[in-house]
Length: 420
Image (cartoon, rainbow, N blue to C red):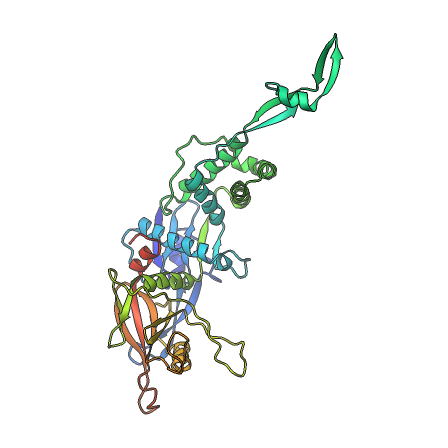
């Protein structure tokens, strides 16, 4: 059950966690945040310690501390936990290189093998439980004699005037599927038992396998290793490899955790899909207009530019770039609780790309208009001004404007996993 609900970026209370026996690694899971004067915008000396991950931690009683994304208002603790984990898992599949690297680089960390589990569960959803018995021909084995194989392979002996082949080759049914099936049932049902109320999964409904995991772990892994060499099908190899991974890294009992320390990566993926699905146009006031029923269909991509003549390999990469008629759109994802400082990088993007010529427009003609925006999470839709150049700095660039586009994070998350 979910005992404590927090948001990424909310204030960290060490004593509250101690009272509930939750362990949080203060060297990785929290950070010191400077506070700013709400009127002047200047940083003040006061600091706070805040949560710095999205995910969960369990205690020895299987209670859960769940940390939700910034700005997500919790309507239902368990359903919103499922929504959050679904988004993390979908993003992790799209960016496996970022989520499953070595311990020093990976953005997704857990002491429970969720990646292997989801591979097993996806196989189960596609193929069902593994149900393929194999029939082997074994010399001097048990079972019915395979006469065709025996006659073709055996030596022939004359006994009492009769030709007798020897040795005999027997058909022997080998229940290849039984062990793999039981391993699948254990992995799925144990995960459901521990995390089913915060994960969008279902149990198998099968009888629990007779597996004493704490005693049989090494035996299970050894048998799976042997079975892997008895199949040549790619999907079966993939299944068995993930079963080996699952049983190698699963410990029964203890405190589990799943932490995404860079939910900004997930936000970038979610916001891109939202833009691609619902962007319609820019308003005369430099505000993004979204339309869920009649979007423009424009695709936003992470486009690479090489603007430095002195060092041509250096590049800039706005998160979202698109061309809308004779206008160019330069947007960047920002996963903040609040915008307290000027985003110099976005300002630089505009100044560098404002005169950019693209092959999509007629030769020697620059874009008529460059729109720039920061895409931020919120619990409601709104547009604010982020940057507008003072006219006494330059006349030629007086039209430069960067907006802050706040979009509903719940709506963005539901759209990302196809449930809106």
